[in-house]
Length: 132
Picture 1 (cartoon, rainbow, N blue to C red):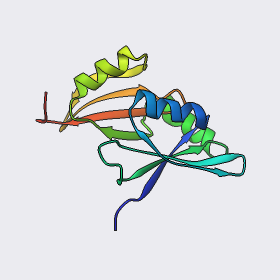
Picture 2 (tube, rainbow, N blue to C red):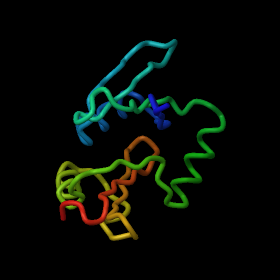
Picture 3 (cartoon, helix red, strand yellow):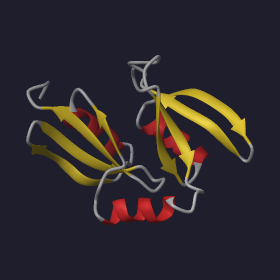
Picture 4 (cartoon, rainbow, N blue to C red):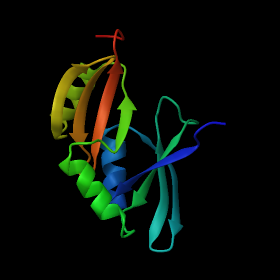
């Protein structure tokens, strides 16, 4: 058994697609109309056949309180692993991405947290001892 798709709730699918592909560097995998929304997934360019991230609309009544509570408490909705956090941090910051937590060491990982502009905090991690 393996994870096929996981989701993140986004306020605007078009804006999210732009951010996750143009800023973070993911690739579009699926864009299928589903009523007023889309089945919209992205994947890592490094693993195009890997786990898909569904950019799911935040319309359900339970989502807004959930997302707001996570952001208020500084809790990331998702975590993405990078090979070189410092390089990614500099690249993304230069591209205008807003970070709520600069790179820091935290146990077995080096981490930073960014705002995805769609209502979520996203954690970037580099495993300790990997490419510094």
